[in-house]
Structure formats: structure tokens, C-alpha cells
Amino acid sequence: MSYRSPLARARGLGPAREGVGHWWLQRLTAIALVPLVVFLVVALALLGKADYQTMVAWVSSPLVSILLIALAIALFYHSSLGIQVVLEDYISTKWLRLCAIMLVNFMNILLAIVSIFAVLKITFGIAQ
Amino acid sequence: MTTRHNPLSPHLQVYRLPMLALLSITHRGTGLFISAGALLIPVLLMALALGPEAYNCVQSCLASWYGQIFLFLLSASLIYHLLNGIRHLIWDLGFNLEVKSAEFSGYLVVIGALLLTTLLWVLVCTQYYGETL
Image 1 (tube, rainbow over the protein chains, first blue to last red):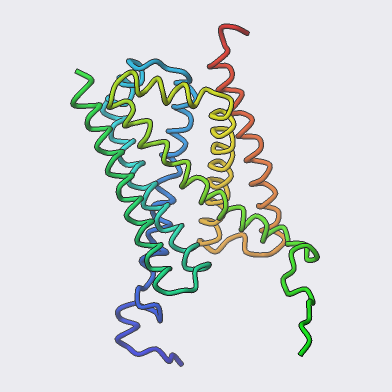
Image 2: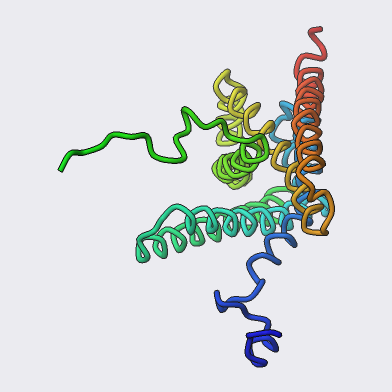
């Protein structure tokens, strides 16, 4: 027999009260990152020591712009989720743990915004 | 009361970490390292957005010997984390959960990471030094 209340079962939230959201999003971003990371690494290896104009032309091509923005979102989200688990494991002081997780989240959100802003600026501001 | 200085468990210098545990902690370590290395993405893109001088500055930094060592370690970590991450996803599907088969796939990941990292840097070197070779 199950000892879980019907309501808890219906909501799908375990004792952590946040369900499988974190776990699921980490897998979702991981799957998205597989092709995106392969794309970035191979492209950068082939671009080598490309000069400024070549790089601007590369970033501002529609497909690359879209893939870079998708990569930035998935990568920094995945990074946030991953570091959160490490912090939860190794920091036992509650307020310190919360502060560290918040700091990491803010940092990653900022890095994602900066990346997206730069891609848009390169695409719509520089490459004409 | 006398203070005892017995080694505490798990004393890493005595206890040999099992191969699976070693790969697991490496997955974490590489994940943290990649998170730090991911700073390069906004830095490189922002440098491009700011103009040729900023871009050349970042480019020469990455082309220096310490930049190249950093990029090599970053790419090796990324490839290991990617392959081992796929192994984790396979576990999530419910496969490869026996110790023996998990160890086997672990060896595959390590060998695959070594091979792909070598392949990547052969590619990079032919791009960089292709004319001079």
C-alpha cells in the first residue's frame, strides 16, 4: 500500500515539495545541449583564427544567431541547475547555501542575457 | 580525555575510489570547470559586438600558450562531460544499470573522450598551421 496522501500523489510533488521539475529540466537542457555543443565546438575549431569580419559574418547569419541564442539559454540554465546540486551537497549552512544558489542563478542569468544581447547587437547593429 | 588521531572514513589516501565513483566525481568537476569556461561565450560575443580591437585582444589572449592550454583542458572536459552525460541519460532510460556494464560504458566514455579530444585538436592544428605545414 502507499503511504502518500492522494493530494501529494495528484500534484506529483515529493517530500522536497518541488517534484521532479529540477531533475526534468536538467535532462531537457542536457538533451538540447548535445547537438548545440557539437555544433559550437566543431564550428569554432573550423573557424580557427578567423578575423573580425569573418566572425561577425558567421555570428550574424540567421541560423547561427538562432543556434547561439538557444545555446546560451540551454547552457546557462543547465549550468545553474548543476551548480545548485553541488552547492546543496557541500554547503550545510542553510542561509549560506541559499545565498550561494541565488548568486549562481543571478550570475548565469546575467551571462545568458549578455550573450543574447551581444548576438543581437552583432546581427542587427554591426553586420549590415 | 585523550584525543585520538585515528584516520576517519573515507580516508582517501588509504581507500581506493572505485572506478565508477571516480568517473562520477569527474563528471561534477568537469561540469564546474565548464561552467567557469562558459564565461568565454559572453566575453567573445561582447568583444565582437564592441569592435575589432576588443575582438583581437580576446583572440590574441586565447592564441597565447596559456590560452591554448586553457582551451585544450576546456575542450577535453566538455567532451568528457558530453559523453558521460549521454551515459547518464541512458541510465535514466533504465539501461546499463548493472555494475559490470556500467563500468564497461565508463571505459568507453574515457576512451571516446581521449579519441575525440585528439581528433578535435588535430583538426584545430590543421586549421591553424595548415599553410605552414
